[in-house]
Length: 476
Image (cartoon, rainbow, N blue to C red; front, side, top):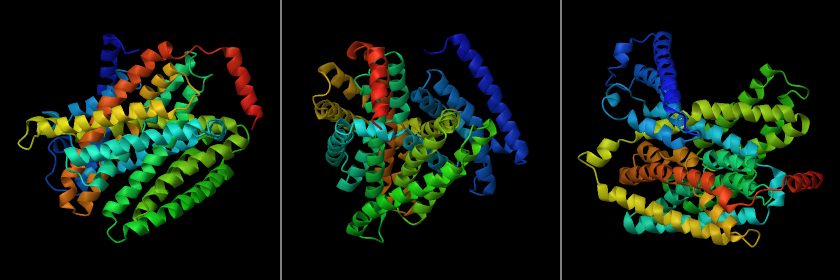
């Protein structure tokens, strides 16, 4: 439930105090004058980077407060980011693009690791028919709709349209998973397998979209290699990524305690998996292997889950819990807050270069994509579910947030780095549509799941659910 005005006021005072303390402490650590930081330097030197870090630390509590207005709400965090880019805040709060890029990469790593750890091989085996259909068919239909809509309405080339399509088509586990766990806790959807299908499918959907998006970016910006060469390298990179994930998972399991785990020992496997994942992501980017990094990190999480659960299930549960806290309290507020902070709403709607009709076209393209996705999801589910359950699945499958926030600026960043001036406008349009997709779909999907789950899904029989669970475990 949303917090009361009294609770919100108390939280505001707490986070204001925390923000001021973080700001002052950071200034003291880096020996910076607070008045100088509030008057940002014109050059892009080391002091600029330090001041960006200080600004980021000061903004974090407010980004988290934005999400705290409505629990699990990404919209509040985005709005907080947008707010701090408005006058008068933008005059003294700034974040260097290099700092923002590093934060996005680390957040992306946390997303992928948590996704890999959440993939259960038993669930995959049980849902081997409906899961691929639910994950693949809506993506293909939505990507096709977005590609041709952007081609005709915004004059994108087809490759840029594909990049947009695969970026927008990814479902957000940050919205879907908590909502489905909430539905399951209320006693709905577990027996039919709907909640399990959505949780597993969200991760698989992200794997497909991230891989395809990385391939398309490689084709667009990979000037040193031909398109055929890049496409031929994809299966090799996927296989190598799975191998790296397997070896990394075995290494983390080998270094993890096998007996009862003291609280202070939890930090070691968490640090190992995060640092190894970040190294793989940065290393693969250095060698222009766009697919290798994300696949390797997801495989690392998957194999770590298999190996660690086998020897120490308590450690695995606590590892997941620590990574969940890391995401919820640090990287989710920073990631979505900085995405909102990067959007200049005043310039977009009222500036000299404002183009309201272009924003309207972007919204139209997103709505077309969502409508095609709804119908594709409904008809891609085979006879396993009834009509009401199919309607619920169709709407539960629309929230977009996590991947869109993590990769929203990837196209534009690459265009800037490689000085492809002709792609700047496309990159800005993709960034705008990524942010608009979060504002449009995340609250809508979240609202629908919470409100209509009890109306469209049947109440579970607890005895039957426990019997089915026992049979599933026995079938390992």
